[in-house]
Image 1 (cartoon, rainbow, N blue to C red):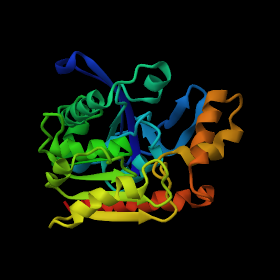
Image 2 (tube, rainbow, N blue to C red; image 1 turned 90 degrees about the vertical axis):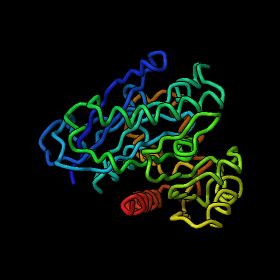
Image 3 (cartoon, rainbow, N blue to C red; image 1 turned 30 degrees about the vertical axis):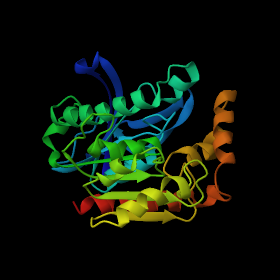
Length: 303
């Protein structure tokens, strides 16, 4: 299935005008428009092989995945994952969590953990509202399935996916979420009582070569509690997966030599990630990414 794409700026007046720059990918039959370009920084990016800007959405209803980026991440550094999920029939919505993006951390505008978790929890509910009330444009609200909403995320975004249903710091979760998935999820700070409060199907995709959120600290303890209870929970271990197994990082490493005048800060950032990646990631990342697309799609399709 072809992929449509729009970028929108949303404003949440109920939270002091919080602005969320948002990417939306969705199924389409239109393959004739202008293709999407993704940029990590101005001049440092690549053209999508399949996403068409402002294409007409394919008739639905399509299930919805709200995607949450990791700490110091950005909404559009998981484009290959998101496009892959769309090819399996999902609408995918991803926003920058202001206060925890790469640029917030570079400029010292990042927020503390409790504020971050509260803001992220509010962002998820706001994005669910926006996809159904027409604020995403291109008539998407007419082709989405209000009864099939899922949340998935990477690293701190995996934590975000989990708290989107349990709530945290006195804030309630969102009852519209049917199931969640954490990809290389950061979970070590979740209280055990919160993990025990999980009542919906939860999947963990675990990179066995992950040095940032190693299985022993961030997957095994949560999984031990989930798997001990009845529930449609699932764990997938990725033999060749590092912490960035679901992001565009490996692809950026491939295209970097072909991009002229790349800022030193970008080179240093990518090389620092490479240093924490499993040996041979350059040869295995596509297979590992395809596995995650297939497993997330299959898991959510059951609910």
